[in-house]
Length: 441
Image (cartoon, rainbow, N blue to C red; front, side):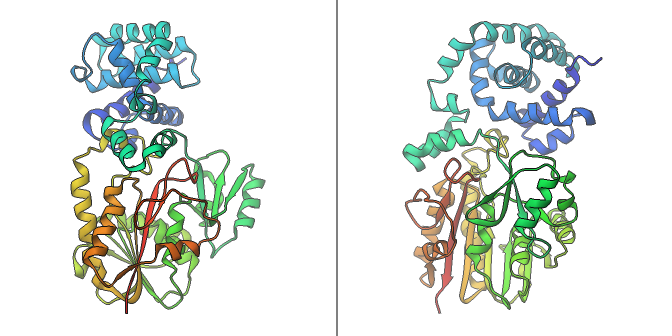
């Protein structure tokens, strides 16, 4: 019978790859060596250890006789995985300790086994005092890096801790109904027959939240193209674009194709939808999603900063789903807390500004451009749009009127500038920012 050390070792490898080598968690999990039967458990351990890892890292610093940075990534990961099980997971304490200590040998850290054992057992004895010390800081009790706490506090003031805490909540699995193949009511009934309870989202009529997340690949409705996975906040892009039959639309930075597909599902008589992405492999993912859903678009590989990349001509609608820090989707991607650095923002903001400048000339007079990010930081949102509006006299901010046309939107915190902001902990969605700009004339 297995002692459980194999699954812990796989989780440790994945966590170490993220915190020590900067690897994306999805990639790290694929390379972790987890047995097929253990994959769900390994994923839960790795996600949880990274989600609460900054709090647990501070605990480990109080437990360890050596400085955190002096420890190898594997030893750091062993501490995080072990502490996570003791504090957050539904695992018997003795099993969590013994299996994690045994995992040290599996990941090549035999000399550290005693050290790991001592730290975990001391945490069991002194848990309340240790956590009380760590939780004195906002970063400690919300488990975020200090720079991210500072940035969100600066931008959101008294709402900051609410946002930070919401980043640690397990997100719902939200489906988007393919309007060309079924209806929300019919899909909800189909899922109910399969034992799934769903809930509607007032401002996203094509959205269904599953009460209990599941592997979407096990849903017949997904494999047969009647639905896709897309957070309700991301589903706002299409109604804000307000495209109509006969229009030509550009989706820049389109991969993996969620918004392209939603647009084609919602407005079937568009003249053309051009889906552009800089990465050929990611364009293949757009193609796969289009094929599964029975849709068609013009796919192009190229950099949105290159005027020739879109194929020429003017567009009635342009969607810029700009590359960003991802600080609005941390609840789905806790590795962002470890991989993102404050210095990254300078390059991201520069690219966001250049994308607006490059694509605006391709918008037809009277057309609408929607700028979107999954960030909650003003530097990537309000500041970028305010600067663009100041430099572009023919650009008119119509976000307020566009959002009024979306029925069911809850009261949202003001972004203190142009645009519309959804933040975790308020609308029950991921964090998203939208600005709707129209070209006068």
